[in-house]
Image (cartoon, rainbow, N blue to C red; front, side, top):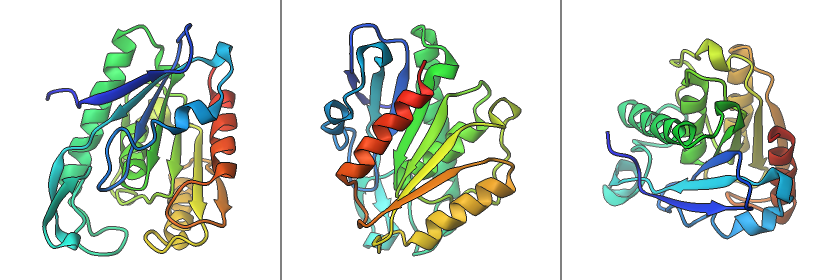
Amino acid sequence: MELLKTVEVESGTNVNAAVIWLHGLGSNGHDFERIIPQLKLPGEKSARFILPHAPSIPITINGGMVMPAWFDILKHGERHIDAGQLLSSAAAIHKLIDREIDRGIASEQIILVGFSQGGAVCLQAGLTYDKPLAGILGLSTFFPSAEAITPHPSNGSLPIQIFHGTLDTMLPEWMAENTVKYLKKLGYHPHYKTYPMSHSVCPEEIEDISQWLQDRLL
């Protein structure tokens, strides 16, 4: 499997951590690049941000239109996706994690962040990775593989934060609530916070993302 093409941004000079941040449907790795400076990470918390580009595939729910996506969505709902493509995307993220470890970053200093579809992939990839990670941050996301996933013991107590918009009509809040419920059923202790926003990111959330990353990174 070839490595995904990525955008890379280092937040400081003494990088000792990595944040792999996945975009949502129809976007690309540049989507969250502009947010990195807004995080205002202190120098001692310098991280390499890796923002991969999803491959372009036909999306059934959009009339077969070809666009960047981590997996096909067959119809509205939590489970109506191409599960094989989700697993393939998760495997591709495992490869990016492996590369960061090869570059000298400890697995315990690697965080997965994902928006919408990207968050679904982060949950699958992070919970099944065979070395301990620093955490998963899900932004306006859902958990389509919740009933099929077998978490790896190395990440059995992984810190997980879910942020969601109460005005989200694309992925309604009940999907986020279900994500939290499924994670608890798997033995995790996810934290959950909402914002009065749609399927997007707001300034208050960006501040909370920054604080959550700082709390996870040594």
